[in-house]
Length: 281
Image (tube, rainbow, N blue to C red; front, side):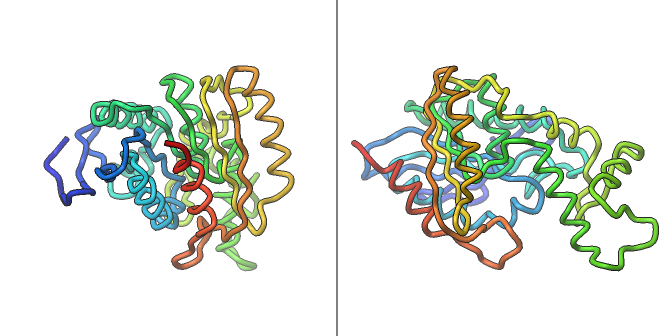
């Protein structure tokens, strides 16, 4: 770890030394007036959703710290304030980043360690936990299929083009995927998505992951959270339960704060999450 950029009694911003380069991180120390409950490693969402959700992630991290948890937020390689271009980002590198962060967090906290993933970060957390078992997983509005995430990402580019797209530009997600396969990358809302990263994300399906035998709290927010999502959660609960995991699905009404809404927040999600993890001794 490099020297802290900002250090207060409760919050420390710094860069991890990693290969390649460095990763920006933010550590929230647990409230010293509360019993220590363990540690939580945050796994952020994909591309621009990282920036749109920073405020909600920061607010919840502060809530967790106030409840007695140590919380580490890390910008993965090629994302946010970490080194590297998004075009160089790879799924395996992100998993490696999480491994470094998890080791660092375990050195700071002797208690149980949980992963907290938002959107694609939820799927990445589940995938990572298959190789590095943890004591629990927190999912905020997760993607269960990587292909769904990539399709939504591509559709944003189509929406941005409107009714008069530039000549020769792809006019559908299928055409965009064909361009990606043929040329190796495609520009979407300022992000250069590579074929390698898209293929790795496409291939990730939560239903077939060998999730660890641990508690999984799945929070779904929306206006309201869709019934279809609850049904999907029920199916996965049965599948993961066969492997020893226990899933609790929490349906929360609130704004989709990962969309392009200025300063969007979901107080109900903050309250529901804090209530679950603030319960007990």
